[in-house]
Length: 263
Image 1 (tube, one colour):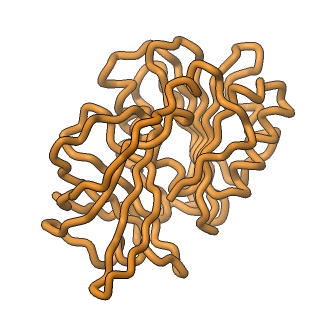
Image 2 (spheres, helix red, strand yellow):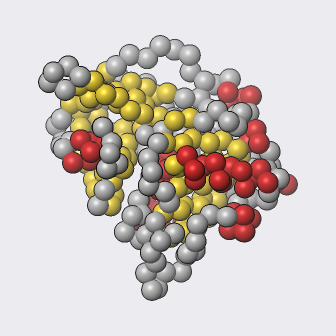
């Protein structure tokens, strides 16, 4: 579930791409599901007439109860624009209204309602050559899967550095995919485990701070575009640090969600 942040203004060229069209609800069929960790599931959707999307966009998903009660939430799109199936990755929030149903109940063949794609702010324009930094907290890694897969498909020469913060090895999402992406030229991936680390863990063992980000992100003088996604507190801390490190506020793009499970 995501909520685009408005605290940091996007570059004009990206803001100009924001969609103004009116979106309607459309049916989606659950084609497959995949557990990412014990409380997180990816849902693959078949949507007739899906217009396509850009890396970083999201969609709204609506559930309707038998008594007519409806609830809807926004989810980042984790699939690449060229993937056959649309994919979202849902982290189950203990007090959530929608995510427990999606994680525990949804099965292949179920019908859901969605509308999208939505958002022209938190998107990556592959025609730009600026170096890119991706900073993810917890399930904030979801939109960055779309970034990385699209980067590979289009053969982009844009260098990307990704920092993924999550609580433990068991809570990691897209573990195998991230390992595969890390082997590619131009892609640097660092992972920090904040609460529990295996004895043989070779990544970072800390929460994000100025020292860690200073070692990993592109230097400010390289004029990177920085994308930060995760829980509100994580996003605010990361974006504040980036600006303090000299990064241009207008090139620090943030997206946050309401869950409490931080990376």
